[in-house]
Amino acid sequence: MADRPEVHLRMLTAEDAEWVVDADERSATAIARGHDWQVEKLAAELEEGVWASDDRWGWGIVVDGDPAGFALVTGLDKGDARMTIRVAPESRGKGAGREVLRQLADHHFQAHDSLMRLTGRAHEHNVPMQRAFNAAGFRMEARYRDSYEMPNGSYAAEWGYALTRADWEAGRHVAGNRGWDLHGLTFEIEETVEGPEPAGLLAKFLQEGRRAIARYDSHRISDGELAGILDGDVLVYRFIHVEERRSGSREVTGGGRARVQRRGDLRMEIVDDWSDEHGGHGRRVLIERHDSRTVRSAEDPDALPAVEPPSD
Image (tube, rainbow, N blue to C red; front, side):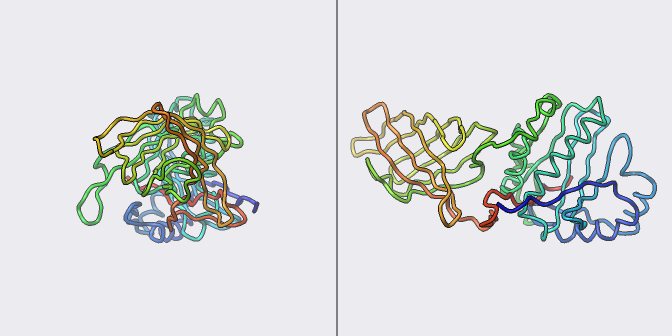
């Protein structure tokens, strides 16, 4: 596995204003708006100490020795601080995002005795940032509906994440091997080894730590949901769905044990053994549906893209 990038945070100074504005402009997307800063105004604010106060702090992100983005933390004097992070496009996909989150937690919980929560938001389609939060030990706490205005005037939801002081003291943000991260991934049926063929089966996962849930459906199954615990590479779960039959629909409940593993093409696959209360059982193989937003590499297949959350 390739080495992780070397990530450092340092205090922003007035001399950083030009590259900070450049990084902000280049990292802005429809789901992560830029700040529309002016170099001269930002330089003056940094010179005056606006971003080095009891309430807010500005950090420069350095990856492998080069300036690669910035992090802003506000509300430090209220005990419930919020982060905004930007990583330049060329530094994404290396796991830098989660390391920035971990270092922010270490610094601000140590430096601010009254700080109880460190929070952030990610656009509902910003799966890489959601996965970075999860990898850094942050818990998904809320879904803010219609909270983010898109360029076309429509509104989208944001996911809210938080790391508490108790989480930090317990070392959740630096825990070792957390096992697989299924959050935001969609799996589709590839092969049925045993049992009925669930044509068109799709399952989309959400995950918080070891807890995983998935919503799924197929040509004959609707309103399916499973919930379980992921221990290493094994997911033990219970499920419920509605099955459409010629004689009508029926509710089906049951459970299963699924093993998560990596294929040669770096996509994840799930080998799933299940049974239900009606006596049905089977084994099937599901494969991760390709998503161009999820960046992986052969050397570091678990690297998380560092696409960042929208700004205030």
